[in-house]
Image (cartoon, rainbow over all chains, first blue to last red):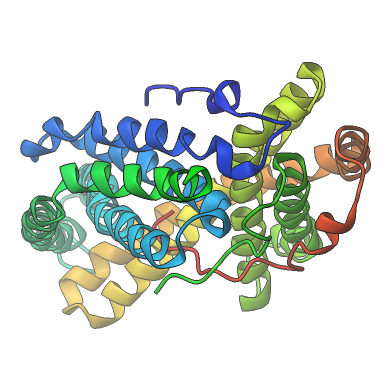
Amino acid sequence: MAKAVPIYKLTQTERPLRDSAPVLMVRLQEMLDYADSIRSPENVAELHNLRIAAKRLRYTLELFAPTLDPVGVSDLLDRVTEIQERIGVIHDCDVLFPLLQDTMELEMEREKRVIKKRGGVSVGPPPFLAAEGLAGMTAQKRDERVRLYAEFVAFWDALPPDRLISELSRLVAAPEESRTA
Amino acid sequence: MAKATYEYPADIAFRDAARAAMDSGFRKMMKNASGTRSGAERREATAEEVEALHDMRVGSRRLRAALAVFANVFPKADFQEMDKEVGAITDALGAVRDLDVQLDALRALQSAAPPNEAYGISRLVERQTEQREIERKALLVALERLDKSRFERRFQKALDRALPPGPAAAKAPESDVSEEVTHG
């Protein structure tokens, strides 16, 4: 994944923590940089990167939370966490597919060797039982991935992402405005 | 509504927040090091040891996030050293934790699956269990490296040098309370 912007270069060590809250906009933008690529379900790496960026935003938001409007920050944290969790379950499927494929191939090879060694006589479980079972599971997981992905895109569109920018901007700016008022 | 992870006052100074946040992550991480290690010493960890590993990972991640924000209160060399070491242990913990979560999910699928699927899943479980063995041993090495290099003492010293403990640090929660998502 793209390296995160070193936000410490943007912080102000001799001032209240609150004054460094604009770094949150950097973290949000890092997440939104992947927004276009989620339109294609094949963009597995980009989706994973979006999740990592959401996680960075969430942890940074938690650090600044006590200095921001509690209701606004809690609402935002809930949504960022939900983004992370929804992509997390999709990612679990994406991690599983190559493992299932590899295991299927390994099992077929192993069973072929066993049968050959026994002179073509199959002993133990029916031949290719493991591969057959894994094929069934792969199909089931593929359906699950399609459903989870569609649900995530619907959730993302309903946010909508642009509103996250305006909400976080308001959150970051609000107390400063009230101090100078 | 999300629970608060940090409980410092709204007008906290940058340096006081840095101290409180890093104390919190560091304490959570080190508090669970012994349970994590005893779990990593054996092939099968107890439920408590699995939980300790998870909590240590949560602490190390929060510590990394805090380091990313508060880095410039440290001399550059101190920051680079701490970031590298916390990053290495976070990765080692993550590799085992991710397999624990995956194996739990696979075993649940296995127990609910028809016989042919259950048999196939059992082969995958065996394979991933072997992978966990590799990651478990790597974690043990990473934990031993922390011990041998006196990481805990060095980190505490670096923190004290950059941010002498003060009243704000005392307000840091003993342990952060927010739940970590499973798919981490």
